[in-house]
Length: 361
Ligand SMILES: *Cc1c(COP(=O)(O)O)cnc(C)c1O
Image (cartoon, rainbow, N blue to C red):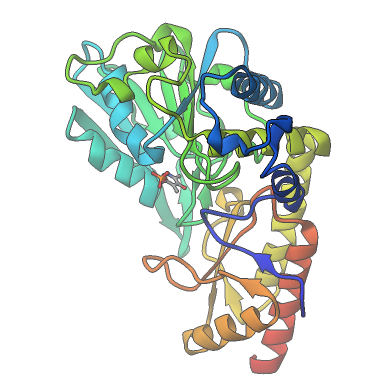
């Protein structure tokens, strides 16, 4: 077995074509005689990288002119702080929709800055997890914004309905959801995503923000988290992670070449369907999330006989299938199948799961 498929949740797989291109031009980028990592972010060559990355992302997500794209640092967790510091303005409250590990972490961090309302939307019905729909959320007039997370990377739970509240600023942690399916950006005040799940290497964080929301940072907000300062400096207030920016740009071009988000969305549906089918057709594997709220990016499953977990991981690795271990707080297995995972990798996992079930079931 020499083909290896990497199901890592993040940092995650990057398309092979992108890696080959980066490798090819690594030591002599743009005929300069050195790599893209070794030039100033203020050169005209790097400026071209920046322009194209922004243009490509804009066209992939259909982002209109009244939004700014900021390329930030500090990861998604940095945004957990930046968001309240920038968006509260004169408000003292914000609504945090709680659907799992990451949205809960955002809620906990926000409490340093405001009176946050913890709105639990995760419920159980017949032992299955489901999420309350946006129309059932108990949001409040006194809140500056509503924060939610459409894909809970660790829990394998997704909310596909886009929240739409008139005049309410909706903020989304799209770290493991961005570019996996089309969205209507106009429904959001701000969406953000660390790159290391569905874009590129870690180190760069995308913030897409409606222009009228820029300029309200609190006095104590650190300059490098102040959207207005980042914006005025074209995301170069401090030295940006240039290699991560460049590689993210290559991923955007790769995705455009594949046909864009509408095409990848269909493929993502197909990929996740293949795995959930195996799980649902067996008495050996289980996933206890209702169909409507199952993640297409992070497929969670448990072996009913958990004593087989270690053997499953050992044998799957021998089969060329890596990083399937679930997060410790959920247990079991997790197959992260972001855009970069080809359907062949998913089919290989299906093959292995059926084989393993036959052997031990
Ligand atoms: C990975 C992840 C984070 C944390 O990202 P960092 O870049 O490590 O801060 C936050 N939210 C979601 C949904 C994630 O998947």
